[in-house]
Length: 85
Picture 1: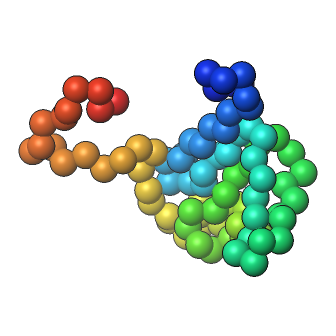
Picture 2 (picture 1 turned 90 degrees about the vertical axis):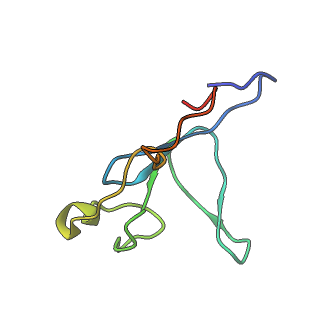
């Protein structure tokens, strides 16, 4: 995966009712600046807040009934703009 400049690109996919999947060469850093080792090219970050291994997902969202869309919430009464996926 590369961007237009030939640099490695990062892709983030919010999974419906699940984690954020992060693919690519990403550096994960805590608030204090300490690097968090990922150990792989694709990681799953918790969105439900219940994981025992935060910031990573451990699947707890399945048992807690976490619900979240994969894409942005769209107002059905508001027309979409050209270019809005």
